[in-house]
Length: 74
Image (cartoon, rainbow, N blue to C red; front, side, top):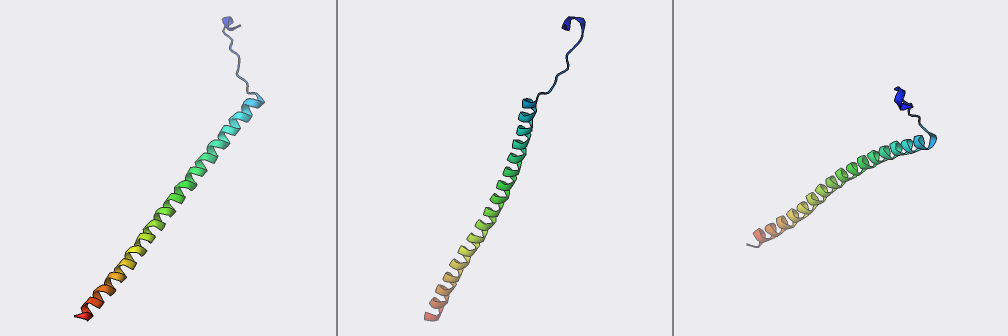
């Protein structure tokens, strides 16, 4: 039948449509999951910066007290 120049139109069947819809939903789900993971990583980086700031602050206070006691001892 292809000899006379006619082509058959592709048709979409129900299982194929369900598979395509499932693939689209999975892709959307994956995009949202990646976005949530990116936000979580940003929040963890901010928390890490705050933690290091607190550690340096405590170390600074301890050093200042040691320096102050050293100066008052002399």
